Amino acid sequence: MKILLIDGEDIMIRLILSTVMMAIFLCSQASSAEAVQWRALASTSRHQVALDDDSVRLTPLGRLAVWLRFTPLGDAQRKAAAAEYGEKGYRSHLEYYEIDCSEQSAVLSMLDILGTSGVRLKRLKGGAQPDVIVAGSVLDRAAQRICPAFDDGALDEESDVSAPGDGGKSDPVKDKQISVESLRKIQDLIKKAATEPSNHESWSMLGNAYYDADLPEEAIAAYSKALALRPDDTNILNDQGAMYSRKGDFTSALANFEKAVKLDPRNLESLYNTGYVYAFDLNNIPKALQIWKRYLELDKESETARQVQSFIDRYQKETN
Image (cartoon, rainbow, N blue to C red; front, side, top):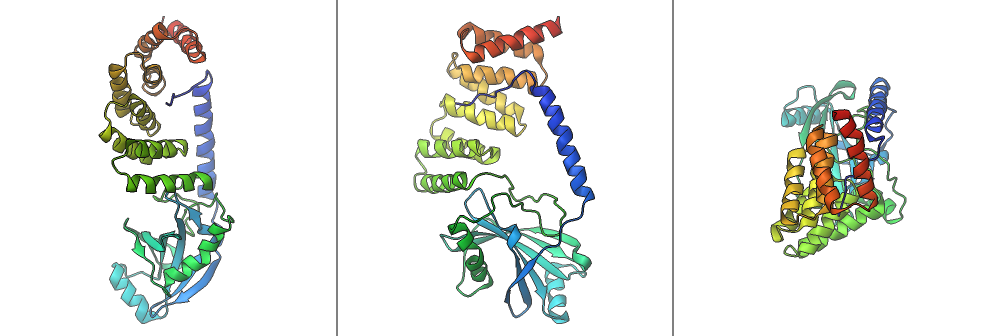
């Protein structure tokens, strides 16, 4: 069961963090990216292929993601690729793969078309369905290069997923930094849920793993599977509501919390979270005060109750 905790300085901390993050963003925009050290990987009939070792990272599904660069071998190959991708200025392209070392499969997540001086002309979205890695292929060689680092535990967990030369700009690929242990736990639970799709507990545990890794979208999806099997589970309603709140969907968050309270009028976690959203996300202090007073009718002794009382004392003075 999750409570949206907050202390008396939370609003000021949010403002400070927002300012700091903006400063970091502006600095990153002003600075140039370090030169990418591409390492030759293979040659095909049309391209010379290189790999960016620094781009290798773990994804939330436990795969290894990596950027590959494809450079045409000659002008005829360049023109053929330009026609294929519909970009006359084509000079080379980057492909972003997620490789499953244990399953020997890979997903092409995205593709960047580059022009003169490496300027990105177009970004194409890849697929989601893994394909088997063919022995001796470019992907096979890429897997042979990067998978041993994963097996030896030498993988840098803080690598970002920016396309080489992007200067730190974020990609639509998930770039949440979480531990290798958490990623492996998530991968195990994904497999468990896939083999036990009617097991409420499997989806609940997967949702909790995503929750702990601060991956709201994934947690919400897993919790939805759990709720489809057991719609009246107030714990899952509360946990999913907390994730809706984390991603800024306050309407859905309140719907979850209020449904949980309707099912169980003594559900303290959902009552607390309802007041939290009204006060600190929607700035509806009168509604929050109403919810917090209901909370204190049920709990007057706990640490959370003392915090709720402090909220009431502070904001009631401000509204009078």
